[in-house]
Amino acid sequence: MFVVPPPPKNEAERLDFLYSCGILDTPKDERFDRLTRLAAMFYEADVAFLGFMDDRYQWMKSMSADKVAPWIERDRSVCQLVIASGEAMVIGDMKTDPRLAGHPVVPHLPFRFYAGVPLLTEDGAAVASLCILKRDAQDASEFDLSALSDLGAIGMDELELWRRNQELVRLADTDALTKLVNRRGFDAALERAVRRMQRTGEPMSLLLLDLDHFKRLNDTLGHPAGDEVLRHFGSLLGQMARRPDDVAARYGGEEFALILADTDRVGAETVAQEFQASLADAAIAHPSGIGGCVTVSVGIACLGPDMAASPELLISRADIALYAAKQRGRACHAVFGSGSSSV
Image 1 (cartoon, rainbow, N blue to C red):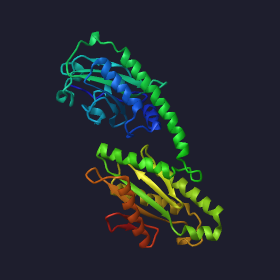
Image 2: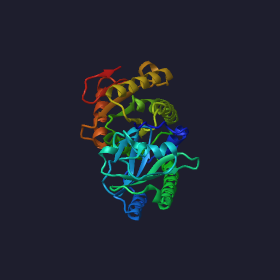
Image 3: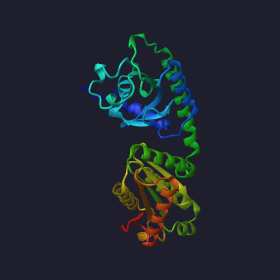
């Protein structure tokens, strides 16, 4: 019976590298598409694909043909064997190979032959696999992996270049004052989050936050004091982005945003309450704030996979909820489509 292999010993380092690339749920890219096309043509395969594997899913960055799913749960993937071992694998007939006996997906596949190579970091961590599939079985002992290995090495070079470019993008997408993601970076992150939600089927949430009576603070204490408040507020908000796919951003002026992947309404409200408690504990001085301290109004919007989804829709709903929070007297949160608030 097929047994899911344990994660590799370098799983933490592997995931750190993968998340640093910022490549998951990004659009198609010719740099990777040409590799799968070449692999399919060279080996006369029915399909070639390049898949990145995080802690729960294998997500296909490129496929030479739409003959495999764009994503699959990690523990149902054949490629998890390549990731777990960090070594190339050739299976002449997936239907009869004892390594895949009892596999939950293989019996339902129209393919029999499999070959895959890992994309390895300099430290030997397998972050992705480049694979080919054929409908007909063939002798694994006669298969030459050299071309697929070379293409995989080129794919790793492209990934490393992608990662370094991403570091430059992060610098360009960072707000100089608060060190959070700026509006441009927020827009890109929200698009990725919506694509992730559609891929995984998990809900997502967006929090829009607006500092209450910030103009009065600036007018009373001056812009340097206002900037210091924004810096302090941004530092607190940044601590709420605890997972790799969470994003804290300065949306504009005294408006901020928090993107929460895999988070439903209950989770989003919990985060909003935790942040408002953290802000209260920080007691940032405000001449006309409640209790003489800075407070914040929060609008929350949530999306599920069964809903019409777009970044624009999510922002619009969160903005409506933010307006509702301000109408209720500020220093509270409101959820789109709900009468709830928390003061």
